[in-house]
Image (cartoon, rainbow, N blue to C red; front, side, top):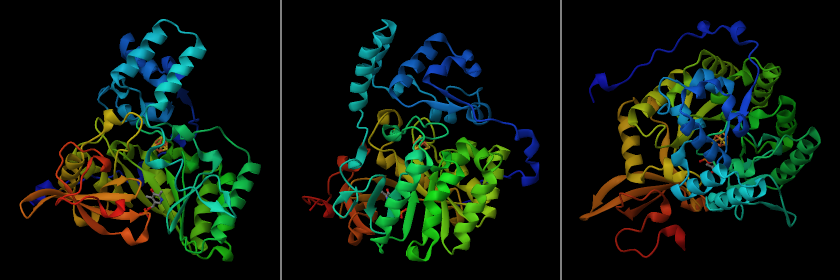
Amino acid sequence: MSKSNIIAIASPPASEFDADAVRHQRFKVYTAKQLDQIPQLQQLSAERRFEMQVVASVLPFRVNQYVIDELINWQQVPADPIFQLTFPQRGMLKPEHYDRVAEAMRNELPAAELKALISDIRGELNPHPAGQLEHNIPMLDGEVVEGLQHKYRETVLFFPSSGQVCHSYCTFCFRWAQFVGDKDLKIAARESNQLQDYLRAHPEVTDVLVTGGDPLVMKTRNLRAYLEPLLSEEFDHIRTIRIGSKALTFWPQRVVTDDDAEDLLALFREIQAAGKHLALMAHYNHWQELEPAIAREAIRRIRDTGAQIRAQGPLLAHINDDAKVWARLWQTQVELGIIPYYMFVERDTGARHYFEVPLVKAWQIYRDAMQQVSGIARTARGPSMSSHPGKVEIQGVTEINGEKVIALRMIQGRNPDWVQRPFFAKYNEDATWLNHLEPAFGEERFFFDD
Ligand SMILES: *Cc1c(COP(=O)(O)O)cnc(C)c1O
Ligand code: SF4
């Protein structure tokens, strides 16, 4: 590869960040009801704004002032990737769904009927992919433990009930099916006890992944109620605490200027001081998210605590289905001290038809992006499908004994013995998910199908 293919991005030095200029920025959020109050939307036609209302009535919509003012380049709208990431677009609903809701809204259908229609359509959008509701639900003493998921031996997922919203919503996300309102400290304490009981009974667990929604919408004192108990000796088997969050994109103020920002950073330090690894699993889709000075200041502050930031996010049409975008994203992350971790395939849910990228094309983008960066930035595994049997990585397209095949590898499996098993599927240019693939070489089934 010639040297000129390697992209270099100069990061502004941290000193360019002017804390006083943003000190007074308050968190202000718009939901579907307030779409019309967003000044920048006035540049769009009335027809387009109506389309957005229709789509926002079915799919999640919530966007805050920082995203609108600092992350979206309004000169590029509607093509702007962050606009596509946060604002509803007509194509996100299938034409028949769009037409039904649009007609109902034009005819001012009574609220109850409109609600029923919307609920029907949501039900058709596979709101709980990969069997999220029926599977992976842990039991303790014969009873279901709410708010936990335990699919892979080493790692327990924890969904604190007060962390089930986000500072903005991504248009491609269907976790809104679980989004609920804010809860008080009492509930946090109860959930925290359940988490501890479960972890006590499971010494094989080394990682706790706190997720949502976005756990960083919580006040620090709530988060502390969950995490501090895990620092005691009886939880020595918990070696890593991960926090899954998109706050570094949607509200970097969380660790810079929010009232309890310093306290959050102090909590991060405590976790490290207790000898555990703290990993912030940051969700990123585009390098534009890393441009604002405050976003970089937030990263710097978290890194200062000794916590590691790892980056993950899905590959999406209309947002980042371009090797150059990924190469620049990974390279910028490395320069800011973030480790690229996963590139995901968009899940089988919600507005999937709008965002999906065929597996073969996803791999080509991944490979092309990898070729544009050095080894230091080649740490993201992927493209990876979070499917029912496990995380399946597309290794590439190749030919074996004259048969064109897709090589795959299970990088995480519900059966630990499956981890790192390679396997092969018949070449299929259109497949967008594991269930579209068939075993190669005339085999009846994949090894995990038994
Ligand atoms: C991805 C994932 C994990 C973490 O897997 P790692 O390979 O350790 O990052 C844990 N639980 C679930 C359900 C996951 O999807
Ligand atoms: S930040 Fe994560 S959980 Fe929240 S809307 Fe985006 S993808 Fe979904």
